[in-house]
Length: 118
Ligand code: FES
Image (cartoon, rainbow, N blue to C red):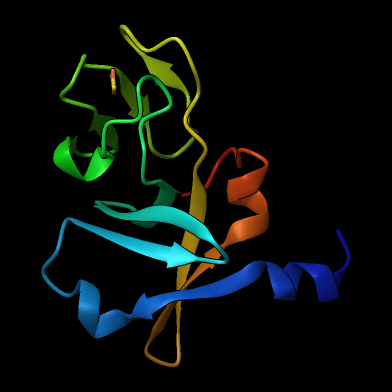
């Protein structure tokens, strides 16, 4: 990916103050519903809906870097998107960065199932 495309991949999800003190925040970015999740390593992004049966992942739990969908207990490592335990599919994840008081998500990596994000 060239530098221009890399820069265009970063899109605003919300103002940083909107996520202050929150564990999860759903946002709509570039026509896609995404979820911001706070981890000990930083903030990451993933799709808002579970890849299993589309439960809202904001109804789940996060413990360290592990996200759990409480509907059927699929779990993922939020750093890599790798499935844990019962999960049968990867979770698309992407990095989030703070710039000028805004949280920006790398949507290119989210669309293509970004790998390491923390
Ligand atoms: S809907 Fe999320 S684990 Fe089944």
